Image 1: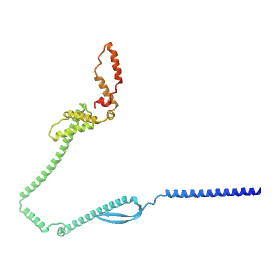
Image 2: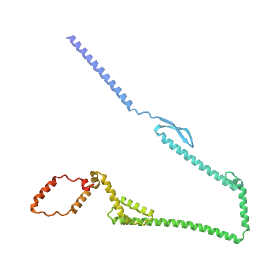
Image 3: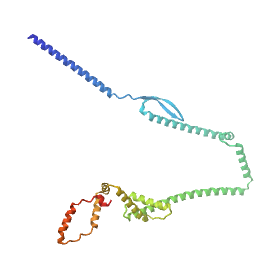
Image 4: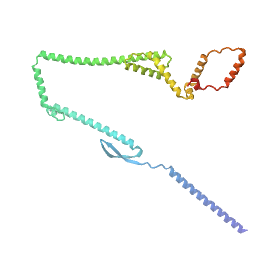
Length: 307
C-alpha cells in the first residue's frame, strides 16, 4: 500500500515537473517571439548627412553643416543654400558697383582729368577738350539773333517731339477704344444672329462663327455673323451625321438621352398620316395584319435613325 502511494507521488512529481518544463519552454518561446516582433517594429536607421555638395559659379565644393540632417532632406537643403549664395553674390556685386560709382563721381568732382583718363571709360580726353573749345569758339562767333534763333529751333524741335509722343499715345488709346468697340459690336451681332436662329448659343457654335469671321477678315471679305449661320448649321449637321454613322446604336441612345428620344418619337407620330378608314368587311383582314405586325421583329434604334 505504501509502495503504491510512493509510486503515485513520484508519478505526480514527474507530471508536475513536465508541466513546469513545458510552461518554461512556452514562456521562452513567447519572449523570443516578442523580441522578434520588437526588432521588426524598430524603425530603420536613417542615414544622417553633415556635409552638402554644392555647385556655384562653375565650381563644385563641399560645405560642413552645423547639424546633421536626414538624407531625404539633402536635395531641398542644397537648393536653398545655393539660392542663398546666389542672393548674397548679387547683393555683393550691387554693393561693389555702388561703391565704384560713388568713388568715380567723387574723383570726377575732385580731379576730372584723372577720372576721365581712366582706360575703362575709353574717352580721348584731349579730343573731348578740343570739341568743347570748338563749340565755345563757334558759340562766341554767333550773333545774339543767331543764338536766339537756334534756341527757338531747339525749343520747337523739343515741342515737336513732345507732340509726336502725345499723338502716338492718343492713337494708341484710340485704337484700343475702337478695338473694344468693334469687339462689343461683333459680340452683339453674333449673339443676335445665334438667338434669331435655331442654333444654340454654345461655346462650340460661337467658336465656329469666330473661325468663319476670322477667315473672312483675313481674306478681305466683309462678312456678317447672320450670313454665317447657314454655313455653321450645315457643318454641324454634317459633323453629327458622320459621327452617328460610325457610332453603335447604344452610344447614340446615350448621347441623345431619353428626353430627346421622346421628342423624336412624338415628332414621328405627329408627322404620320391619319389612318384611312376601312370597311367592316376588311376589319378582320386588318386585325389579322395587326396581329402579324405585333409578331414582327421590333425596329432597332439604328434602323430608327437610318444609320
